[in-house]
Length: 243
Image (cartoon, rainbow, N blue to C red; front, side, top):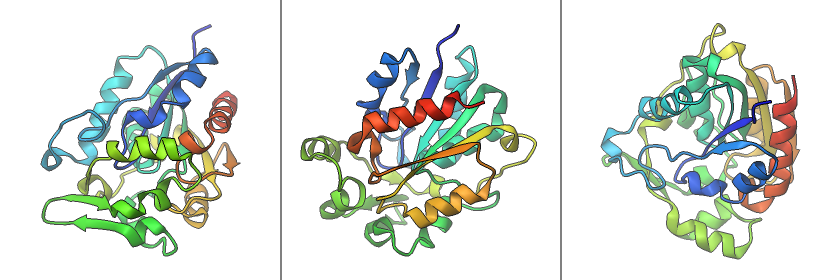
């Protein structure tokens, strides 16, 4: 029997490095795990001016095209719009979509549109948008409060220097999703009850946008890959096993 393949997509400002505690746990469970950097993030050096939602999607579609069987495609935070758009393009390459406190706008909506309506979000309050340069930052003294308030100090200290400016274009782009493509892929959600960046209220709205196969709620901040990696892996394995 072939090993389950997980492709884990990170969120804004982050890179594939954020899954560093999750990946070995999934591999211990006999899964194959891929943690790519999106263009311009992590170790990828694509200039911000060249980045769009399409460049994100193309990079993941190319990766999936090299894999032999349908994968479990999980997206954290901004990674949610990436996995939605990938599912619209290549639904046959995906067995399950799992949103990890992930953005999941409806057809015709953008991430930023939904995020600006999340009025209790600390991310909304502390995001610094540099429109002319085409990127966004988080106020340095607010990063832990927004993303990592339940994480160990050592993990926070290691993560913050690896954050990079986030291109605006993908967050401004409205998704184009159809019932024929996106609508045919199994969809699950991992809700984080203590998230201050994407509040539980917005997460619930996303969960209600489309039919869900199942969901799991973790007592976690915005970064369950650091605050509770074992519980996150348990949730990922549970949701991918459902048929």
